Length: 501
Image (cartoon, rainbow, N blue to C red; front, side, top):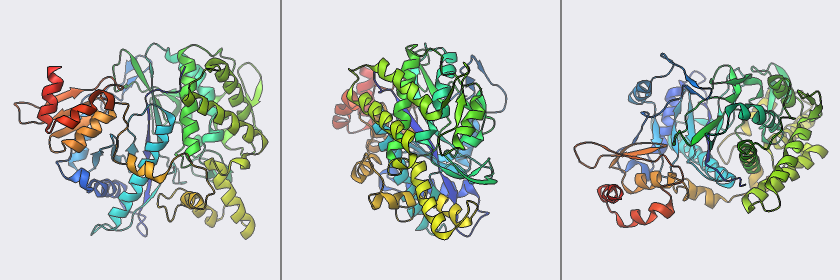
């Protein structure tokens, strides 16, 4: 048993133009992405396009594929032709425009600490992109927020992806992962003023996304959002792997929240793969309880289980943790033990007083800021000043974002250093295929014409383009191919070695 598996995040960032509420978000999002693409290591060759050929977002894990005009890969290529930006970065990540938001997708990594590292690299990337855009003639200031709602009825995603065994029955994932997802917001929520999709009721809640989920299971990601998403698009060998696309989560700034959110999910999925759960924690009404838990920062709400028992969200998480401890045993590897120990520490603190974790988790940190200001100024939860503080917590600018100011003052605990994060903006992870993708883009930028999660396409002057498939995410690592990049001066040299093998 190990917490390690192939995983990644995809974060859509909120965007606004000061003084221009009617600014076209697709245009401004493209300006953000293109501004970052002007970085020297990205602009020295022809920009590689994203390869949509193998994408199948309408294939459903329940055994069927949606058909019709809902999705057409050619439309994505048309988006690029019309100016919507799409950049593949030298760290193996993807920076692009998704609907009306700039989105950063981390490279594939193998553990929750690296998820934190590359997710944070995405924040720094967005902050630099906004700064570059502000100094680009004809553009000017554009503000970016790592949050999930405009509080006017719109929500945008913070998705996670976990590669798991294809042999695991999908019904088992639904049955056993749902209680975990409904309740993990107690440590993974980002906090929000407002109840309901339009925030019409002025109270504080734990999660930014909870009010936007309407069904238990489904394929949609923007309408009728499901707790369990059924998209079956592994970006890997489909006979061996399933990529579980998790859309029910908040965009976290706190490093411990991201670490715990992804690390605990990986452990729970390993237990599901092994058939370790007995089904005793099934929730009677998951969608209603998801919202009820979020609406109760006191953490006293009792969730009704299918067997008639009633537990708070923290108690249900503690039950999952107890089973995880028994499953992992005393010989859990260090990565797994780190997650288990933090999980236990956080749940114990939440059971006493959530505000003990105001230096570690987002929703208590933000609530602490808001409560202090609210009491000092004698404001109710509907005050515009409080709404501004809520939003400002998520600002990616180090000098403006309230989260970043807490960090600067030593008020938020961290797992990483800025130096590590800055390095991850350009350097790929060493132990996944992202290493091969990233190194190809940095070493041979003019010869890589396209790439995707599972392939890199070269133009080396031959009669046709050369596609290098990467269907095994743990191949193409530094250990596998690092030496090749040291001795192959040109992409043709690299391809000669690969094809000879």
